[in-house]
Length: 139
Image (cartoon, rainbow, N blue to C red; front, side, top):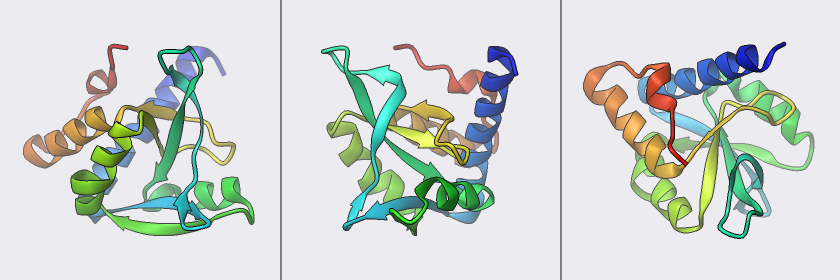
């Protein structure tokens, strides 16, 4: 696969995340020792050029990828989208984390800053449509 093909696939899964999260009103997170699983970002760095932490989330259609990626190290737990928007994402924003969207079974996919994800979820609710262009984030 070319880089363009991968980007298109990642963006497709990210758009599906936004559409499905709004439609089902739930997402899934990996939990280990009562904490959300975090990994190193492949897209974003902190001010010191170290990778930012990323918390991956999945929707129903991609929940199996979460289970495969977690192996036996974590459990998949449901999170209401209302909690995601109102409490979880603002807290994550303060912790300087990005959010992984519907990653594949190897833990690879698109990431967005929490604020941008909230904007896109709200846009999906209001307008009923989010496009690939909406995923572009100025770093």
